[in-house]
Image (tube, rainbow, N blue to C red; front, side, top):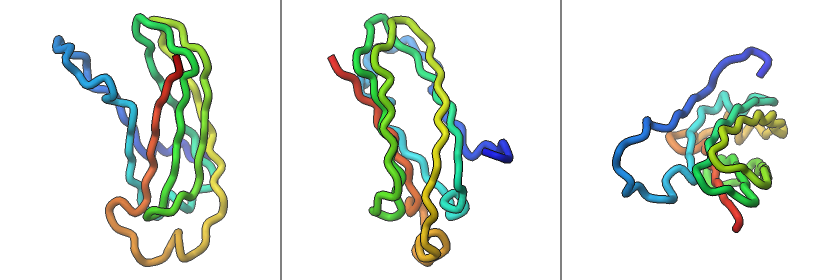
Length: 124
């Protein structure tokens, strides 16, 4: 955060004419990071999402950071009610706990070792 370096950027593909898209598409996002990511103490993220024609009650986003299959940190964001046809932006500042040398510099790093999962849910 202090340097303003962009670690990753994901955008939704442009809309298509096809309407037979899986309604759960976009509810789960996975990112893979390098060992350098685990050494960061603070990371900022800007999330932008749009709401369709139907209002959303109890909108929630859960983010989990893993090393191998070990959960390192979990974040739970509740947005509550989201009005229809709205474009929403929020910024999250993540504080990461210090990690052991074994985790942040140790052996075993390969594709998928450092993993971030985002899950989006909604109520009624």
